[in-house]
Image (cartoon, rainbow, N blue to C red; front, side, top):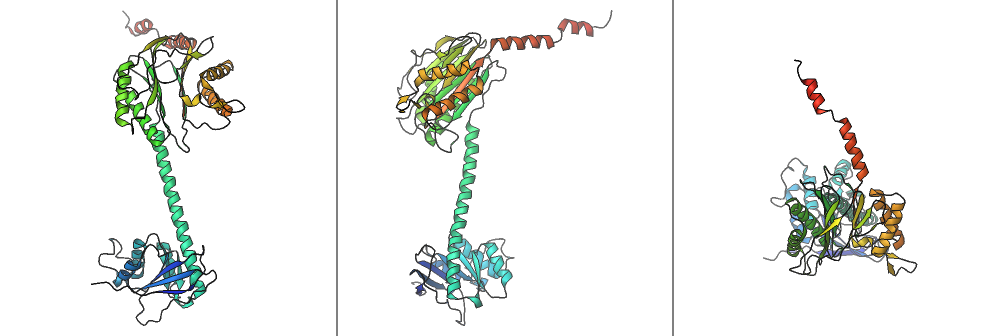
Length: 446
């Protein structure tokens, strides 16, 4: 059987905030028929259309998306609540607030005005506390007041919704920041004589993670393994893939893999996890022997590291024996090259975001690896090292570029100071008690 739809009537035009028509749904049950919506004033040519519902069931049918505001009579009996509409825990609420609660549940995006008697100000204030945008007294209701109250309620609801969305966005951003910060690597170098520093800056706005990734671990045999890589692209998918590759590298390294075996396995991980076959990643790995004087180098389409030995200018390590980037060739191989480091040295690994910034007055030339080497040598001549060196280098690259870099930047620095290591060893020997003397002192007298 068709459900009868209560008559919808239009009232004279009323002023609205944006000059657009509004729709008011009036929910009231007046058996005597004495309540009527007053004539609404017109100042802008916009109209307020009025729909009337005698109970909550009828209101549910009339509550369409084009309704902007609801005028609810708080004297509407709670008996008009549809069956099962009262949630658990609301039995103690007054009847009028039970109906208001129901309206707020079925109309979460609509502005709500509470209508009550003049001597019931406390109940009216409670209605606003529960969730209504405003309240009106029945005896003081006129067209101008109602028109203004409707406009106010609609705008306040919009403001409340915007504030709620802003709060949700802020909380989501904070959660994402904590998640991204937790995915940044923590170097595992306990027991190593090497000093470690890193600088990481994603190219994506308001992000903490980009497609660049790095990591450093020390295995039980004393070898220090370092890695830096770059997934092509700059979005969140590339950042997620970079995290997967970094964690896979750490797990494989701790499991004893290195060189070609490790990179071949990483390529399998990339092929399974990437979104399309066009995605690839460059990578550079270095494993430094326990004595710190030599290392094995593997390059997969990545810029070669920079080395600065004590008393000598910085230069790039050999890269002629490198292999292709991961994900380009299905059966690629990556040879491992032995490199002599010496006693005291600084080894810097970086992604192409550091060398692809523009330089020159016309901004058409790239910094490039040669420009980076010259820049690092200048900073080393100033006596910089560690985090200060990396911070100064990235700052200078940005200044040469004329502004923020658009690409991700990751820079990793490992340093070994042989003189400092020897001094620390001598100090440790002096502070250690003589074993024989200690034993003699504890031996009981003959």
